[in-house]
Image (cartoon, rainbow over all chains, first blue to last red; front, side, top):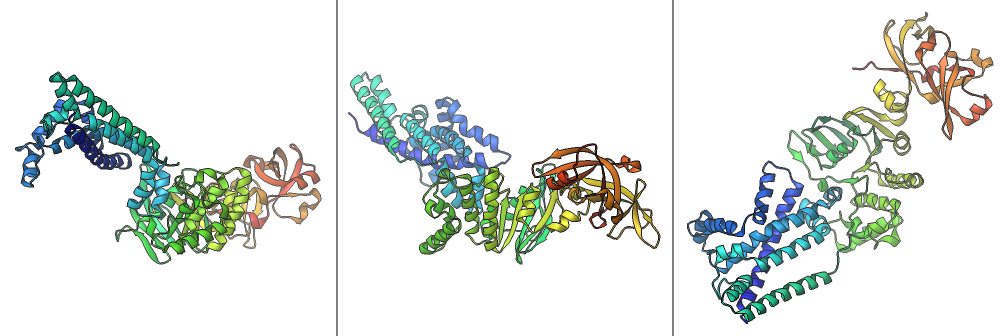
Length: 216
Length: 362
């Protein structure tokens, strides 16, 4: 069995979970705790990858991040190559899991009593209140969002294919490798990779369920 | 000393309170929707007024013109929320210590221990708020505000979440804690009795404005306007005309009666509103009416037994019948002695020193 797709997928899912986690918590906070004119628009844009076909999302990311794309030129000048590298897989997984994180964390933030935050605000600066009151109280919802994000990162297919390609040994993640194996009629290989995926996700869920619960 | 005057607009509601108060307990008293809680939120800085200033012991914590708006945690102000808003994920000790930052660990612990002792919660330091009774939570909330040694303490309806028994016990405890505090306290309440029991100063607020502020007895006995009078439980408000009764002694002519007043009256011929508290109306034995001023004869029209006393309604005979009913508070003892019942003929006196003339509505 090839190890590369497994390691790549774990790396991609881990990095995209961190990225989507940080971004998602920030966006969710903005959406639940602030009021500004473009709020609904921001919410729609964030949720878009959930409802659009992955190929469509991947296509536009390709245009955006490609060598001649508006962001791509700028990134290339900065020496950062994205498209058709493993980094593209991370971007793809991040974009795909961001709405899941945002939705879960938004729901979690909404369960935090604004009065408790206000009480904290009378005693400490806002940033400290966020870290010591808001985050701990919303922790379970955030964790749920991160689990979803990791699972989505492990399974991302469409956007990754468009943006990173399926280059064996370079950008071929687990789902792409499984697809490749099936195409090549190598069912044993496909089976081994699929079982590995199931194993990783099961172990992850088990570990998370054993984490100490935050008491409320 | 706390001194503020500001404006805060919330949709159609304009909050524009102004008050100056010293190191004392002031009750901010008014009906629901008067702007009481919003005033506290502005004072601590969770809301930013559009105009005005807030000064605390000479420090400006807010000034719209100068662009000063100190964040809440730098105002040296403690706020105790109505439902306490304790941190459910932190122990009692950690709740108390939350506002103590930048202190050495040992000092933080010392102050938390001292506060636990003061609150009589020594055994509860490691408990979580969810494991405490309502009264204990309230004490923790109070301690969390007091431990930062604020100059201003704001209490938002501190007893409203408690049952009657607990409320009365807690009032005494809170009073005791406040005596040791020594700063300025603003206590928000919609309960007049609570305002009277807890505070030396009362500020009556309604419609976003402070209508009158002053020593509690002054506000209760001498409400400036009809609106304040109604808020502080003066149910007997009447209209009369100032007349000269000879010898330069002005009295109020009222439905054929001539009522003597102690306060100075506006010039003769002016129509005035005057009032008397229901507990200040005296029931007089028939044979003693000659000894009293401002005697009215009439009969009782209704009585409400209120557990500790009676609320009686009185209607005068003669012209004053038109004036409507006069409310009287009467002790159970007197009610028994005079054998009172609806329909009974009685004499009442409106003591001159209790008749209070209201300022015309502006």
